[in-house]
Amino acid sequence: MADGSMPDIGSLELLVAVVRTGSISAAAREIGVTQQSASTRLRAIERQLGLALFHRTPSGTRPTLEGEVVASWADDVLAAAARFRAATRTLRGESTARLTVAASQTVSARLLPLWLVELRRQQLAEGRTPTAVQLLSGNSTDAEGLVREGRADLAFIESSEIPSDLGSTTVDRDELTLVVAPGHPWTAIGPVAFETAAAEPLVAREDGSGTRRAWEDEVRRRLGHDAAEPAVVLPTSAAVRSAVANGLGAAVMSRREAADDIRLGRLRAVRTTGDPVVRPITALWRGGARDLSASGRELIDVAVQTARAQAERRTPAPQ
Image (cartoon, rainbow, N blue to C red; front, top):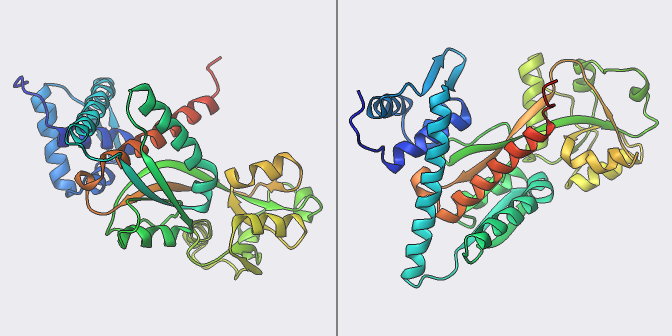
């Protein structure tokens, strides 16, 4: 039976995190509590509200219809709480919010600019001074290190390996694609066997690159052995694209990163057998969810909203 009281902010953060991630364990890591504690708190929320909010299955945790509705209301409450915190900082005379963000190359080139434009638009629409953002770009390992060292408030990485000593949450997904020059033999043979691609010495990024790590981790997961050593190692995605376009070999890279070259005919995307290789885009920060700054939380929320909107646009309308 409902007791008539309202869940606290921490409980609402947990509720929203479970709906977003589809997993109690992932949400627990994000919030900075144990899975057992998270499960107990979720059941307490359900008793408090008198509603069944989740379907719990071996494959994950799905919200009920009531859970979806309550989570959307909780999002509104959390947004209002963030505005309240920002307003009280203004009353105290604190300076404009500043945020130093470290991002891997794909994120900094293809995603972060869209997020920052939307963040600024939302803040101006609410009559607030936009957050001043400083961007530090590198590979995923670089971005992790900048957060650990305290030189960045927030990082976005594209790695399949998520550090356990930092707060984290998945904000988007990114598909990897095999690319070659237009005249490459693989363009004429249909899907290339995943095993063949794994055995090919590729044009690759340096150690520490999230793209390289995600590909090598997927090869080990599917085939039980390491991918072939790269034929060439280059420091930037632009250098990889140029080398492949000039016939140096094949590469695996973010579909987002290769999209313009594929559209213009400089590169060809080659399908491989099996499921697509997809890796998470993950936000990192020091500490747990409560240690995340208000401006950092706002940017993460914008990233998640943007990913959802893009996914909805890609989903065909029912006939």
